[in-house]
Every structure is written in C-alpha cells, then in structure tokens.
Image (cartoon, rainbow, N blue to C red; front, side, top):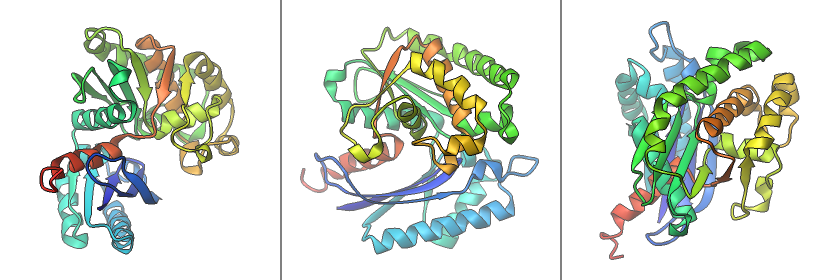
Length: 313
C-alpha cells in the first residue's frame, strides 16, 4: 500500500511517500519539502502568529495535493516542538483540520525519541545490541537507549539546531565567545539528563539519526547521499572537534558552498555541530554510526505493525 507521512517540524514541513507492507522495508517514492521555520513565526507570547498560520495552511494544502497526486491511500500527519510548545497550538491544529482536512497529531518529546529509536532499531537490527540513539531536530534533541525495539529511556531536551541558533548565534555571526557560550549551555543541559542514560550501562552501538548528523557526517568525510542509503556512514568526534571552529569561521554564504550543506541548513549548521559535539563529549562517545531512518520512518513502521493483523500478515 502507499502511505504518506507529513512531518510539521520547527524548520520544515516534509511529506514522505512510501510503498510499504508489513514485514518489508518501506520504499520511498516521493518527497516534498518546504522550509517554513514555524518556530520563528511566533508573537511575544510564543503563539504562532496569523501570517505563520496562513502559511502553514498553504503548505499543508500543497502537501495534501501532492499526496493525492501520488496515490497515497493513508496520510499520517504529526507536529513536533514548535506546535507542541505554542500556547495556541491546539487552535492551529484545529484550523489545519478544518481548512485542509489533514489531522496533525502533536508528538511529545518522549514519543519522538521512542519512534526514532524504533526506526533505528529496525534499520540496524538485533545484532546492534544495546543502542544509544541521538536525533537533533530544529527545536529539540532526542536521546533514547535500550536493548529492545522500545527504548528503556527516552528523553527530549531543548537543544535543537534552530532553537540554539536563535538563542546563542543569532544574526549569522559566530563569534568565539558565542560559540563557547553555546557549548557551555549545551553541556549543562545534557549533564542534567546524562545520568539516566549512564545508568543503563555502556551502549554497544551509538547512532545519530537526523539530517543534522548526516550533514555533519558528510562534512567530515562520509559518503554523499547519491551513493545510496545502504552505504555505511559514521561521524567521528575527533573530526567534529576540528569541524566546529572551521564552520564557525565561515559566514552563512561560505557554509552554503560546502558539500552537503543546503541553503536551509547553512544558518543552523554551526549550532547543530556544537550540540552534536557536546552530546558526544558528555556521553563519552568517540564514534557514532549514521542512520538513514529516523522519526518519519518510525511513524510509518508503527502504522504497518498495527495494520499487519488486519491484512492477515
């Protein structure tokens, strides 16, 4: 069957269309992405302002039209930290449902972490042993750990690449003192939660699963996307240590010229790199594998598992 998942994040709205059935790997057939930066379209109270709501409605309508043209049989929509934290988030969700017919489910930070962990487990399999999974989004960093398909610990902290850019590196200027301030902030936030992960024991495999981690992997020598999703990729802490000051020394225009950095990511890649580096330091990670599957795939795989009995699988 053909499924669609619509991810309304802090930075982008992303529609992924896959052909899938229970027991098989979902095969992507289409991808439709728009940069919306919803987390920047807030008023003084933190609510999404009217222009932001109007643009969101336009993007969701467009995504639904693409899903229809692609023959999607079921469209699953979800929203993450931007709408989760907005005081008017519930009203915005109702506007989306009424005006576009698309129902968006707001995921908690813990649910994000668990669904991402589930997708990464399915990708790497049982032979990976106990896994620690990290995912940097626009608004938050998710961390999850466990030996089964369901994470034993699932955490979400406010260290997304977009959020930390706005709070510490606004305006595209990355002065050393600002980078140092972000490193200290990230370290403090992570240390407050790290004990819950350390209590689980050492992981057999550490995985980074987000676009931010994949971009950092590309910048430190991982294979480009054109070589396919099954090529093993990794990120080394030592390489990231060297990358952070180099990225910080470049302006946004210089970062856009780097292989693997999109225009949408150029303004946030420094903050993402700093958060990734501090997470690896605090959690004593020297190397992590990179996963092509993350939250959207987790949503799809959970839905397929639920459909399996109905389809006689």
